[in-house]
Image 1 (tube, rainbow, N blue to C red):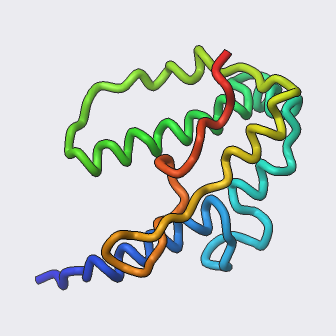
Image 2 (cartoon, rainbow, N blue to C red):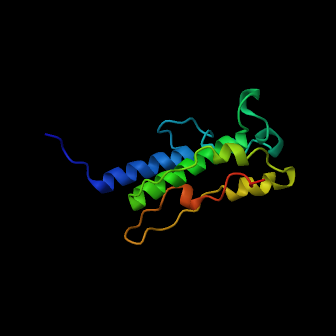
Length: 137
């Protein structure tokens, strides 16, 4: 017989993991200064426009793909609707970050934390709280 997990405990743990992944390293599983946003802050528009490993999509496309996946996941969880998704769209559309948009794009990724209506906890950074990773061409 399994023991049910209290939803409040699960939610808090999930929020901590998402916060660490995207924004604030607390030492759960990342080293200081290595969250996704901290790492991306060190990348120039020119660097983000180079294909990863010289062979596949650009870093900008890779990051946009992560944001797209999280958007789809959030939609599925909230609506319980699992629609067909064009997973290759990002690879076709995102190739480079224009140099003049590099700093603006970085700033737009900063997650917004918002108070929940029913508790004092904040929502973690995630797709609903992020703008697009790179401008569409």
